[in-house]
Image 1: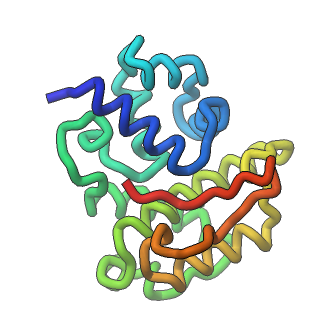
Image 2: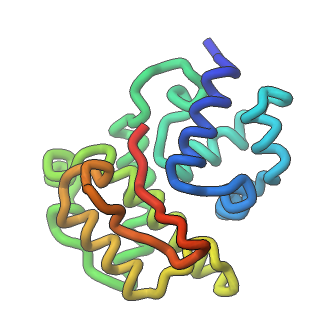
Image 3: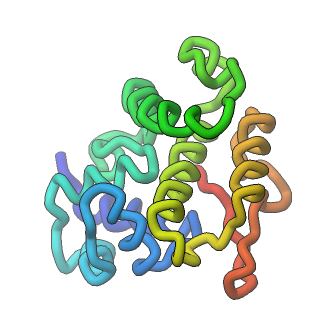
Length: 183
């Protein structure tokens, strides 16, 4: 059953957990279905209900299930969904760099990395795709070496990032530190 209060809460939780403004989330949604910042604000304040395609676009951006976002289930990650989102990203990423074998082979990936870490990687790769498509963007303001360092740290940690004492990235933008998020 759809729960609009839960959707509003979880959407805001995802957005603020990653330290994104409504405008920044709106910018990231241009990777699939563009969603205006005002629409996101209306959903979070329960003034409007998102179309299914818009909600799915946001769920995919953060690598969480639409059922979780809509309040139908309590588990944010579904293995099949994570695999599909990862595979789409991995094909693109491997054109420019090597990923460890522990990540490229699905059965090994499933036992080596938590679903939380894998979802954070999908989100990181989505941010990276956005910044490559929009070089003028200052969304995260990371140089190529910083992207690679974050990815490497996530792949080496093999533990959920939110257990770390210090965030693994800290964009210069307004001195605000960002931390990868766990629902």
